[in-house]
Amino acid sequence: MFEDFIKYGRLLFDQGLNNSHSGNISSRKGESIYITRHGAKLGDLSFSDVVKVNLYDESRDEGASCEIKVHRAVYLANPKISSIAHAHPPHAIVLSLTDEKIKPIDMEGAFYMPEIPVLTKCEITISSNCVADNLPSLLGVFGATVVRGHGAFAVGKDIEEAVMRLSVLESASRIIFLNKLLSGRGA
Ligand SMILES: [Zn+2]
Image (cartoon, rainbow, N blue to C red; front, side):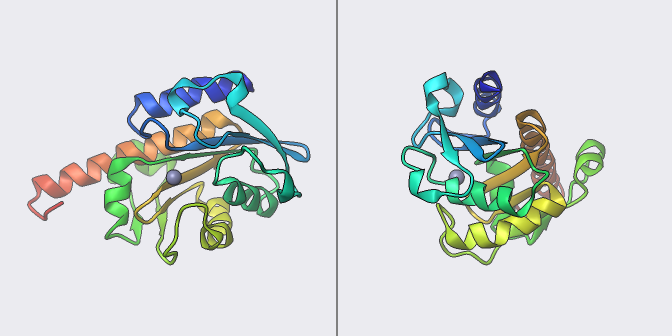
């Protein structure tokens, strides 16, 4: 499992879905959450960058990513979700500024995720109680969600599936963005 944090953290960075210090990854194991530490560089993780916290007890979250409250809320609301990945995919973020949802127009994007909702109601979106309250139900249905102006969260049965959803989301968003440019409707 630790190898997957390193492998897919690097993949998110290499694909341009995160900057040097953005993003986080977690996996649930029993009553524990393994999550990247606060300030970790996802593209250059080591084993010591993954910290273990309790699924139920937030008093022992020291050192964890500042998004731990969102990850915990997602796990508690969705018992079948095993992993979560968070990134800042630029084209998806641009679309989220104006759109209420992202509907892929390419075959592969539409196949994997016909619709990705945008969470628009939260004014504070980093380490946010509003996001923790509203994101779990969306992820349980759609598998990925963009938080307006901030970034995207995706879930899966493992880290690979969560990261795959972020990757598909960004490539589908890039295609929508380019199509808007080409058709003269503005970016
Ligand atoms: Zn973020």
